[in-house]
Every structure is written in C-alpha cells, then in structure tokens.
Image (cartoon, rainbow, N blue to C red; front, side, top):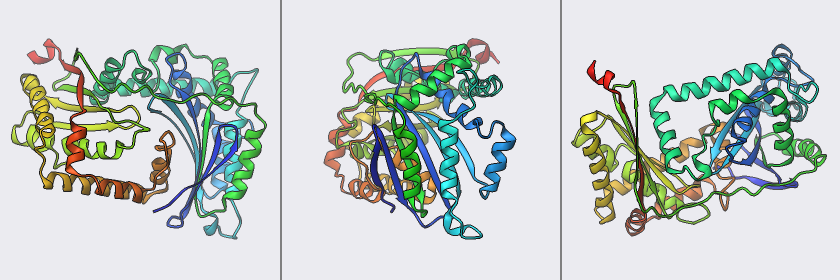
Length: 427
C-alpha cells in the first residue's frame, strides 16, 4: 500500500506526497484546519465552495471550465467536514497524470497553479466576494442544511450529537445553523478567507506519479508570503458518563429514529483506537454483528441497527429505525447486547468476521486516489500517520481479552428519539 512523505514548508503548513502509479490521474488538495466554534462554523463551511466557484484570473464558470477542459478535463472540488472539534476545509484539483499527456508535457504545475489561483487570488471587489457568486454559494449551503433536515436518519444522528455534547464544541453542526448562514455577507466572507489563510493548520497533499518537487515549490512560495499564526487544534475528551440524558422530538414520519450516544476511554492520541474500532464493529458495525443478528434479525425489533466509533472524540453512536411500539424493547436489547459483550460472551466467529470486514473496507479504501487521500487526511489530527497495512496488522493482532476490556469502557450517555407525531400515527 502507498506510503506518505511529509515535509514542513511554512509555519503550520505541511506538504504530503504519495507516489501512486496504479492510476492514470493525479490529485492535489489543500486542507485548512480551524477550531470548531459556533460563531465561525457557518462562514468556514461556506468558504471552500465560494473559493472554488471562480477566481480573479478566471472570473466566471465559463472561463474557469475552459481552462479546466484545456488541462485534459481537470476538475476542481471543495468540501468542509467536521473532524473531532475542528473544521477541515478542503479544495482539490484532479487531472490526468503527467505520464499520460499526449505530447509528454507536464501539466501538474498547471494544475497546482490553477488551484493556487482559486485559493490565493479569488474574485474580490472592495474587500468582499462578488455578490452574485456569494449569493449562489450561500443558497446552495442553505439547501444542503435543509436537505440534512429532510433526511431524518442523518438529522437524528446530528441531534443526538448536539444534545450529548451541548456544552462541547463537538455539538456544533458542521455547517453551523441556517440562521448563521443566512446572516453572512460577502464582506464577511472576505474576512473568513483572510483568516483561513493566516490562522489555520494547512495540509497539502499530492497523489499520483508526477514529480512533487515543482508543486511543493509553487505552494511554498505562496504560503511563505503570509504572516501566519497556527491555532491549537484539539478535541476535548470526556471518558465517562454519570447521568443518562433523554431527548425526544416528534416529526411527520412513519418510522421512529432511535439514536444512543456512548462515551468511551479510547480516543486519539491513545493507542487503543484501532482495537476499539474492532470492538464497535463486533457490536454493531457489520452484517455479522451482535446488533444486526440479534436486535434486527432474531428479534425483529428494528429495520436497521448500526454502531460507529469516532476515534477523535472517543464516542460511539448507535442508530436504529424502529416502530413506536418497539422503542423501549430496542433500547433494552441494545443495552443487553453491550452487557453480554462486557461479560466476555464473544465468539471466535464474531471476532474473525469483524476483522475480515474491517480489513476489506480498509483495503478497498485504497482503490481510488480519492480514497487514498481521504485515508491520510483522516489521520492528520492523529498522533501519527499509519499506512493501511500497519492498521491491518494492528487489527489482526487484537485479542478477545482486549476487546472485552474496551467494551467495559463503553458507557451510555444520551438517548435521542425522533418519533412520529400523533397526526401521523392516526393515518
């Protein structure tokens, strides 16, 4: 599997290169990490798409798409994600690898130049982004927030997180609130852009077989012109829970959404996050898990029941879709399955099946450049960068004793229920 070469090129800026010859494309990304705060989440969530929309050199979609087409159909992407208690704003450009150009020309420097134009030289008018571009991107972000509300499974998980971590930065939604987005102005976004360039931790990544030296030189020159301050990026870890909170909402839905949040003692930079990921997979992360085979299949209490582990925050989220009359039984059976695991009632089949499923997922994540990039970006806040093979080896060495020990650190913290309103039940 591919390994990564990492170099510091400016204050708080690292250049990461992954030599990968299996694909005919190359990809370059710039990710800016900032602390997750309620007052700034909406602005930072909007910034990547606004930067990718146009730039001063190519001030509209037609001119930008024309230059991308001339680069063998290259493409620009932008997104924002929550990682622990920080926001990661990413802009990418991908195109044909230098090995496959028709005349043997090197287009990777052009791709890097174009990405830098988008990031460092946007279309600014009187210290504000162009109003038309701003309004378009703002509308799209509001639509994304509304779409998240309309997808009730995603909405329920988000509400559980907000309730469970209401006094922690982790409880802030990755897009901020709809009201905060609506209040943003084009002049505000100019300030967010300036702050992101000067007050963030930056990870640049180049993947493919093209020589990374020129890309590194171009990006180093850009960042070296800035006076930068690097913020502290950290996530508050709460390892135990005393009182279990319960939150209930109603909605015009037919099927209730039940989400349960658990605290654990495993989170970065601890070295037991890989064994904990296996523990959670056995509990509810695969088709051979305890939740799937017992809560869903054997007892038919729910339509789905899945568990996921956030290694940066150290929490486990279990979500399920249930009929109203089965809600309490489902809660009790989820608790029973965890208690059974904590007593050591785990079969060799359950362990080997979970290991096989996780290993397969890990290896398949490397089947694309985007998957490889996501693998390393997902570790940028970890104590160290690991290859897939290293994690696979760590997974395969986990013992039953370790699994039982870690299962006993999983403590229920919050129960969130989104249930049908009375009018929907009457239909």
